[in-house]
Image (tube, rainbow, N blue to C red; front, side, top):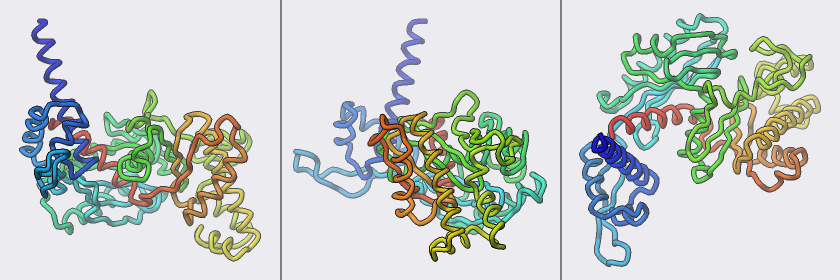
Length: 391
C-alpha cells in the first residue's frame, strides 16, 4: 500500500512539473531548455524529457537558435504551437453578444457580434441565435476544425459551472437554465459556461497589462455591474461561485427597483439603463454615446450625469479596495469611456474617498483587452482544463 502511495505521488509530481514547464514556455517564449532548468531548478535531463513529451503532444515546438547563457554555443529555443488547439467562445449580454475562435496562443482568429434582445426572446430562441452565429464563425474561419477542444460561454449572473446551469441572470432574466446541455445538443461540442466577469478578469491577468500582479480585481460597468478577484493567477469564486456580485450590494434600501427584485442595488445607479433613464428626463436620446458626446461639449445636464456616474464607480472601487486590498483594480465596460482620461478622473475620486490606511497601495487601470476580454477569458479556462486533462 505504501508503494502505491509513493507511485501516486510520483505521477502527480511529474504532472505538476510538466504543467509548470508548459506554463513557463507560454509565459517566457521563446526560451531555451537550459533557461527552463535554471528557473525551475530541475535537472537538464528532466527538463529535456518533459519538453520531448510536450512536443509529442503538439503543444510546443522548436524555433530559432540562440546563444546559451555563459556557454557560447547555440541552443534551440522553445515556443508554443498556436495551431495545436482552438476554442470556440461566446460572451453573452442582454442586447449584443460576441462569438469567436481563439487559438492556443490567445489570438482571436475570427469573431462576430450577434444582435439579440434577451428581454424580448425566450432563452432558447436567444441561445439558438447565438449558436447560429457560432456555427457561421466556425464555418468561415480558416483553420483545422478537428482541433476545436470545446466551446466556452461567458454569461452575466450566477452560474453552476460544474453542471452548466445559469442559476440566475437578472440582466438576461434567466433562472435555472440548462444552457450547456442545450448548446451541446445544438452544436455537438463539449460546452463550459462561467460568469463572464470572472472570465474577463482571468483574461486580463493572463494577457493584459496586469499579468505579473499578485492580487487583481476586475470591475465591469456595463448593462450590469460585477467584479472578480484574481489572486496568484486563480479566480476567487466563493462557496457557490458567486463572489464578486458587487452590483447587487445595497446602496439605498429605498432606492430604485433592480432587475433582481430588490431596491437600491449599486447597479441601478451605474448601468447603461440607469444613465438613459436619467438623461431622458431632460432630453429624448437613443443611446449613452449621446450623453458622452453632450458632456464633451460642456452641456451641463450631461456633465452632471457623468460626474454622478463616476462618483458611484469610485464608491464601488473604494469598497472593493477595503474588502480585498488588491494592488491593481482594472475597470472596463460600456460606462468606462476614453482611457486614460477616465483613469485619472476615477483615481482622483477614489483617492479622496478611500480610507487613509489604503492610500498608495493600489493602481487603477482601464482594461487593455476591452470588448475581447470575455472571449479570451473563456478560452483560457478551456485551454487550462484541456492541459490539465492531457498532461
